[in-house]
Length: 453
Ligand SMILES: [Zn+2]
Image (cartoon, rainbow, N blue to C red; front, side, top):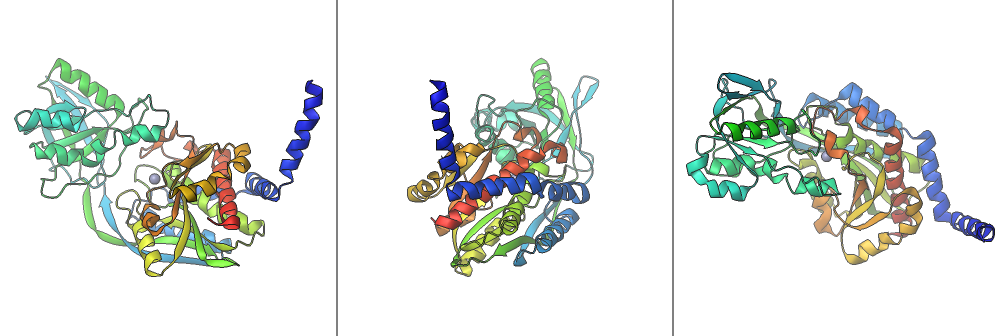
């Protein structure tokens, strides 16, 4: 029986392969997998420029470099959009230890982005551990005042999508300091947002609530958090010391970097694909989000290389300041509105450069259904998860302009191993996986451009 079925399957396969869209998508993948340049661009970005926190010299260099890459690729239009960005600097390397009796045990911490410094001599205080804001509230001022609060709720390891685990824990990092300060705490130490058990603290953005004292806050490694928690159970009177010298400088001028191919038939309909150019200061920002930036550039390079003349206008955008302000994404959407631009779709890659799984979308049922139709064409490339989901931070502000927001969805299992930690370097990115991600986005851009939404 097998021998009869085999040729039938083969014929069916050949028929499928002769579909012009299927052939074009195959060409897109072939181009990127054999001649793709995104990994080379990422290598330069990581090794010759490195960390790119908003307002830093690295961020300014990255603007000039990606602009030059786009010009060298002869994208018909390449331009910068001015945007003022927050300028936070870490200062000297942080110091922290647990003091119990006469013993002092060093633990790794990093200041959270936006945090104030400790006094120059540091802060030493007793520690109170909580897993939630509710628990903190129940303890109240009586138990919290004058202490350092340890927020120690881990990312839930049972969540298969690690972004869900992140979403379930990250408010501790974002709002922990102000929540603790409400009850008179003098500092807030946050368990790192990672499922990995190691000694690398993971930084990230935080915000102070208005009208509440601004207390210093830092992330502690997961091993450090466990150690502190264990020692606290043995000795609730132990003390924690930390010192950090970060500060917020005046806003600095920066830019979004944009490359564009004008559409031949419907130039007023814009499809934008992008990632964010800024990165945290502890590493090269390879996965977050150098990967997304170079994949987006690769999309336009590939259309050009294959001689595909898009009907609609295709733009690639390097957004500035996703990590600690979202000023670039906000500015981009504001200008789009001011200039009466019609963005039919915005695609963002900011979930890492891992093996592709699909696309998550935010939009009307009708818009989403129009993309879901492409499932069959994209399934052979591992893009099985196409449907309602989440878009991306930078494209979010376009949401109220009727734009379909699309987040590229790679495998999420290892992303938070590196996210915002000193390990987010080029060696965290696999070249083939990176290219497959770029090809996924290029294929989707090709389809949306051809058929519209
Ligand atoms: Zn990011």
